Length: 98
Image 1 (tube, helix red, strand yellow):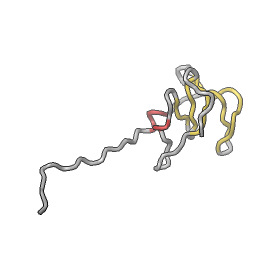
Image 2 (spheres, one colour):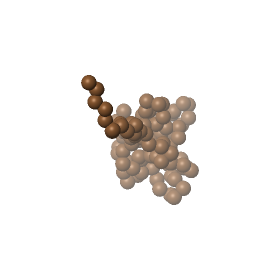
Image 3 (cartoon, rainbow, N blue to C red):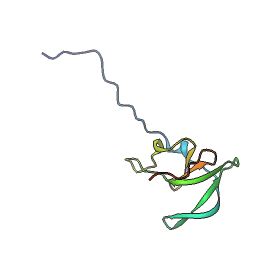
Image 4 (cartoon, one colour):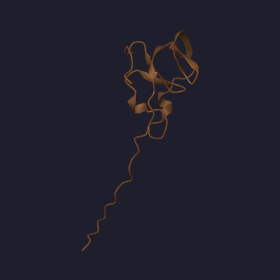
């Protein structure tokens, strides 16, 4: 005998966070070339529109949908398109583990 219940399961909630919340925009790049991505140079520092400085720490891992995995960012880390990770100078670790 099947029992019926008045309760319905709630739809699964997505933990997907909007990438835009984690992207630095209007940045200026400075310093030495520390690598290349898709044939374009990666410069060691970036400065945002408020004058805050960030240091390159790695390339953003991708999530299952192919976008940047913002949940893998550490405190003080931000994405700079096309998927580079820069950390605020105060919070920047020496390097990001791959």
